[in-house]
Image 1: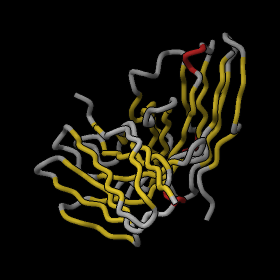
Image 2: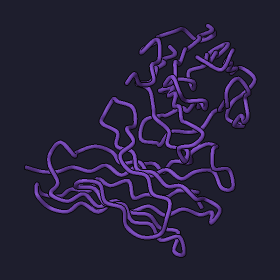
Image 3: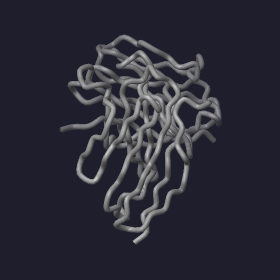
Image 4: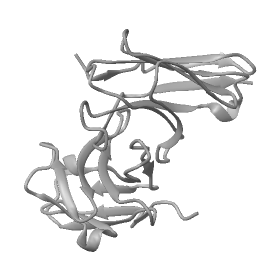
Length: 114
Length: 113
């Protein structure tokens, strides 16, 4: 049983650079979620997809953030013009529509903006 | 008022004791409730889900839900040092069963040998 995978696991970038993260959900899961977590806090919702449709975006997701899920499979999260406040763990989760929203998380991508 | 509240801890219990973790939520429209375990530097791992009032047991873990009081708890029996982690309570977005989860800030549990 292959779980959720995320790449890269770590990313260090300089302020102002663009970064892109990838998430591959569990194969039979049609919903995919992005969360952000900072130290000492629970994950905060960013956006989610059902198949290829982006159904909700948090107001936390400024216009520097964009997410896609072409063909309803993997998803990418891009952050443009990174700021130091973007430093966090970016978590991807997936779920099946018929499983009461049980969400399974990938290992995360830790972003450090210098 | 935060939507999902947990005591941040740390909660310290001796090995073999029962650890009791508590969570309250603010919106009665929430229908699904989850407990995740998160080891330091790792991602959250789903350990329990509960949808109906009452108790749900899985091995050493028991989840308890009281929708009238808007309260959900997790009991860990025979606590082991390997249970030392942060436990996150999560609640589904009200009136949207398939939507986002709203997390508490987590309770840090330390099990002392």
